[in-house]
Image 1 (cartoon, rainbow, N blue to C red):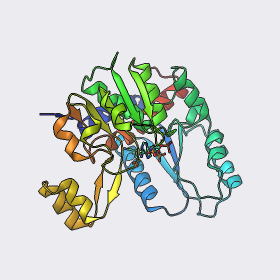
Image 2: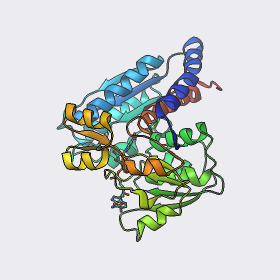
Image 3: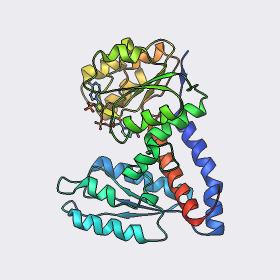
Length: 306
Ligand code: NDP
């Protein structure tokens, strides 16, 4: 039977390890502070931000929301970010993406003080990651590494194939696996013979954004499969094709009119060594790693060694 890599259990372990560190910060100095900037009304972003603020509250991190209107200009965003950069009580600044078209996203991310870049998207953070120097790591790939560590998945010398090369998941994921001494292949939409590339992998990481794209012929039997994808499927035929034999998932579809699926087809799970489910796999770790980065930032700026 394949091992189910349970993201909620790993998330709980991460959050538990942060509690005494937050308590010490509060006792000796002050609570860590996180500022979240959410522009306009994007329902998905609103849900993410709510979850982040709730996680802060549960952990004792002081969080505050900034809610510029959807017609905000790049200049206004830069003004806000600069104000947050200067605040001593703010350890982390998170600008929820995507930003509206009229805002220069790169310029806004570049304006964030790298020492408060808890999302790990600033080029300084990317450079630190590339050079394997200390710094903020993007939360989702950092969460995957915690997952692999938690379950004792051997990495050194293993072949990891990362499908996806985005700046926030695929590229940093590949770099983290490389620093853990994996031999890494990065695949993308122009990769030829993708299934054959993936079949060579001891560890497959799917970060594509295409529901159930990775099928059984992509994965060798003893591989560990990490599914980063979060996709909502509304077409009944597709849901039946994926989950026809899973009463719980079909019932969820009947109730909600859609299901959330990863980039990996459920048929893969019976034929691999271990896998992350969607939901409940990688997803819960992203916010946990954001909390971890925020606590680390507060410790660093307040001179406390964990
Ligand atoms: P992007 O759209 O930025 O990147 C997708 C990547 O997949 C690109 O590199 C693209 O290649 C590649 N790709 C697309 N189609 C194919 C194909 N047919 N064959 C091979 N490669 C392909 O997505 P993100 O990296 O931001 O996110 C990926 C997934 O992870 C999404 O489902 C997203 O929702 C999810 N996600 C989950 C998070 C979590 O907390 N669990 C956090 C962040 C994202 P190319 O570069 O050539 O276009």
